[in-house]
Length: 342
Image (cartoon, rainbow, N blue to C red; front, side):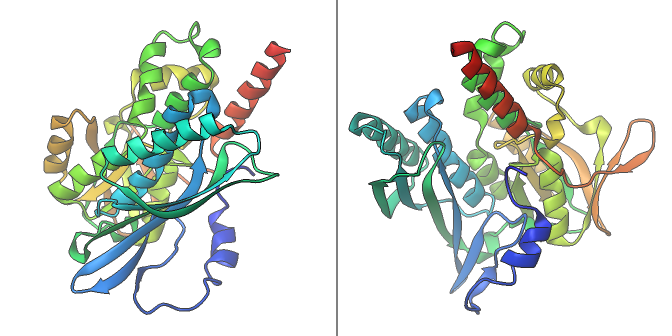
């Protein structure tokens, strides 16, 4: 199976084998928790997140570098602590030229400047056996007040669940930018779908929600909205009930997902933020004032797992997605594009 490993494998192999035990660890590695947190004392914490350096040349190296930065920044920001420092390990393919590397690096630096993050270390080299899109490792750090932490494990019974932007933002933004020739004559809202690329970040969403009053936050990456909600429920040891009638979806996203016959709520959606809060109205208002669509769609309850209260009055269980449909679709479109260029 492509994408992230299963929670079962994580619990069986990864979690029991984490090296030395650290007494100052506030948030240990956990499936569904975006960041690690170390207690620095005096109500200060260090928040850390690592992901691959994800670069897709077809998007343009600067444009792709922007997204690589925001993948990390979004995860750190969901902790309630702004990102500040970065370490980047670039394991580059031999084919990358100095001009291409220059373009990618300047694009990375410009994106970091926009969010007030600076590079404090790393490694750069060309190596056989490496290739796009995974070009090494990227770590981002933030330092802030412990009392402001909004980890995905902090959801409380009685919290309202707020969602920003709706589902499949990343699926739509990436696919229409990677395969414009396929989609431009098939989608009525093609231009809007392409512009969603620049919505594939919840860095701003998270900092606004944190300031307005959040208990827990999580971004909807692989597995989409349903995956993220299940991760919050598991990490916080609570149940979540979502009201189907309150869900919302961007019209360009709906059109693309209907065309591809995929479920938008299980599709990768960097840019969509899940917020658990006792101050839902204030959070939604603060986000809306900054032009970020947001709505309260459910509630945290006692129990476990995620349930959907449907418009016909029935309630159904929403299990974690077994696989994100984005990867299969992207692979099929890549193969189709290759055949058409032969």
